[in-house]
Image (cartoon, helix red, strand yellow):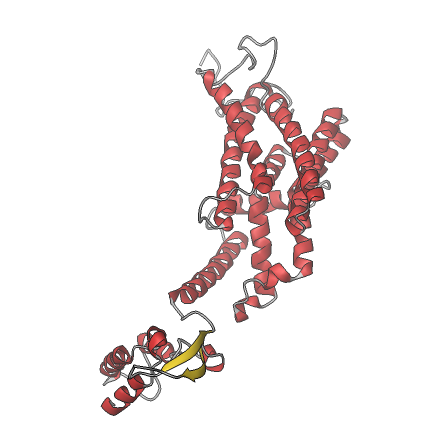
Length: 387
């Protein structure tokens, strides 16, 4: 072993010495494994710890793992003549980076994500009366009503959940990628970019970007069919403009040309103005000229009026987050995926902020006309005064 150690170290290319396995440390690890397995291992059974260690050692090679035995990390082109030096000099080339823990960590979290998705799905459809069965099945029925719009009569819970999905387009596109990653078997080859290169996947991105707005538009069409009010058709137009804006953004991501850029700016601007008007006037019931509270509404649940003004400004700013698609602002060395995650989080915050004032207006004014009377019934039985 000592002789082999000297031979091994003597054959190392000096400038690539750090890329080779630490042979001294490897011997120490082998001694530890020998101590662990001594007296414990038998012909038929092995502990999970030893299996893990053996699997890790089995994947070791001079350059990190078995895959690199076929494609070497370092290529030696030729030996150079050395002058005035006792050591040989070689012309070498680094073919790939030395293995580290990044690959193992990525593989671990991908497996963890798969198992968690399976557990979540099994809990969701579990027929046993555990884990809030009524709530789980209610969620399934609401999703069914949304997906098959306009076949079902629109209830408040249905349209409210569909509005939440309109703010989850990035999440739906990530789910699309995860589905492609596992269905196509890319997880087996660890080819993370395969789905991004497939034409069908890129085309499917259009459908995923359209779906939440399409479902919401179909709900507006169903309400117009049931109630006959033209305001539902106007609301439908808002979601059509949002679909067109989402489609132009996806097209611009595929082909970054001046024509698509101008179309993105035009469609996104129209959709933003449309949505802001509907947010403030229809959904929140604000901007009323003859109101007792200037540019708000007569009935308010919050005493501090400035909160409503601040909320309108905040909603305006968060609605303009699409400008990042056009400007492509870079935040030093922040990855573009981190920027996308940050913008998606801002939209979730905006939607939660929108929910409060939408429910407030619905509670006070029956804005959506989902109740037969404006008064909200109290959750307890009335008692006669004589009692």
